[in-house]
Image 1: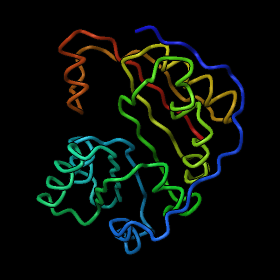
Image 2: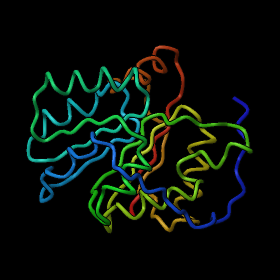
Image 3: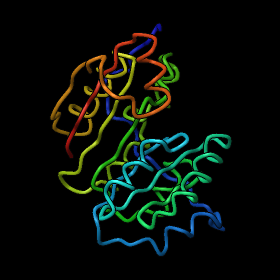
Length: 206
């Protein structure tokens, strides 16, 4: 992939759009318990990872957000079948949803599995860690909260690290290439491992 790095500079302030009336499906967040640890997966696809995590950790709250219609249909069906009271699965644009519905400093951990790298430089403002919209994630994350990114695109991994550390002020806790013998957590991860691709992990703290 011909990945073109963005210029390392702080973006203009982000001004979120307010939905009025609010989408009806967003109301499910109004009664979700707030006291427990909260983990959010952005772009959770069909929900394989987050549903298993919610099953294994019943004292932790999980929110899975998926924008695309086809994947979110499977996600919603699977989460309903799992009948977990510590998981909310929702079809939405994560930035729009979180900017309007998430209290500041409410999220303990944010997960991004294989986000679209939008490789051209002119597309850089669509990348999560380059765009001014990253401020939404930053505001929602608790102090010392963590961001977990995994990608099969090494330049994307490096750019995310650069922006998180030098623009957004995060501490990089870990960055590495993953071994090929890990158990795949998502369908994309299985596909990349089966193809013998390298996978890159980044862990950062606010």
